[in-house]
Length: 557
Image (cartoon, rainbow, N blue to C red; front, side):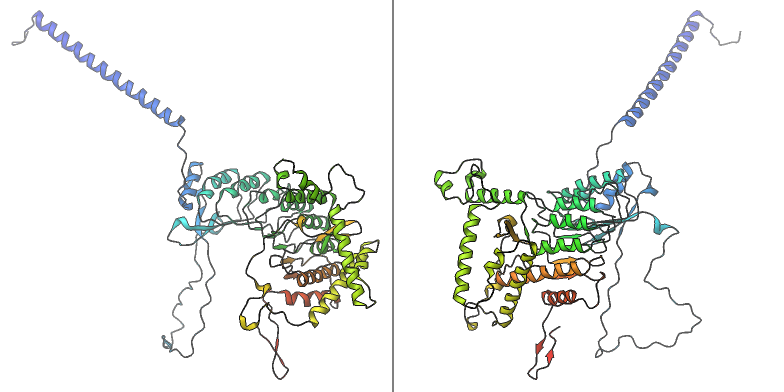
């Protein structure tokens, strides 16, 4: 045994106790580490199962779109870039010949030197041009919240992308134009997009082109709650089926789209059936101003339907019934609220009561008005003492539609003769007074329901003036021939006649009519007459003034 080592029982007991304490600390440490590991594992599992908080868009399209794509699971390389839409450089102003040239002519440069690269293009990486991107236009490029237009061209928009647009589009306050070209839309994605449009506060212009959809659900964009003003649906292979849906969205007997003023349906597959359906949808619509049906398959039959729409047309049975309801509610406001009018109002009402049957399609009020107007016309013709044909007899007799055409033609001829021979229109006061003529009054006339316009009884039917709210109609590059041209010519003449007899600042009629590239003879008299009439209707037309020498001088600026 070495010296200095105490081998007593007390020391041995102390050593065993110290060893146990040391082992206990190791066990406790291992248990703590195990518990910490299990806790961290549970926390990681909770993070995986936990649903992330929904992203709140800020109205800045670029960061909002990128973040929503990242949360949707797209890799950074798969997220479409948001870029500023390129603009064509403006035309430089012409040089001022009087101004001195600030850049004096430089010395001749050696041809061997390398010329600087032009600055009219930007180089990109290989295939970067074909990568999907979203082009935007802003009011101020320094302010991300001023996005006004969004253009998506040449890549497919799927359900996931529509869901992203559903979140970020309504938060863009200044967005007013969306353009989708060749984006592979389907019936479902188009309907989902149509549900987003009303949520955008300032969205007015929609362009969806190059997206043929077999189901043709185009009417869903033009619902009653739609705020769209300009809609372009070119190159979508729209057939008569789609045109029928668009017709119902434009108007029915009881409903009407109250915001759409421009509709472009050119470069589609619409035939006479679809043209007739669209003309039907415009019977009760007095909001649409511009319509384009260029490059379709419309022939004389479809053109005649538009000629009837623009001139005058008879009311159907359903329209007559709705007209009587409107007149009843207008004359008796209590009936509109479900209450019965007082007996005095019933007695004074001109509408036929529901319990009284009548064999004709006209109500009693219309018959009385027709009789009184006929008496006045007869009296006026007797006072004239000129033995010519009478207007009243023209409307009375004739058992076919041709009599109506003859009557309209004679009325047009008489009115045109009177207006050309008459004096120039002046104001109610002297010219010195400086009073504004009545025709130039700035007060706008509120448009009324077409069914409440004045009607005329012709051959047992109620006829009303046609649609005079359309100011621009494009029927070029179709298959319209001579018969269709004559129908349209008659409609234009009728509108001019009606405008001279009863001017209405809210209903001016056609101002622009495009009929080019149709199979029309070069010497067509009807086409030449239409061109001459529409030339004076063009708002930018300026008549030629005669000089004192008798030569004509153009007033064009």
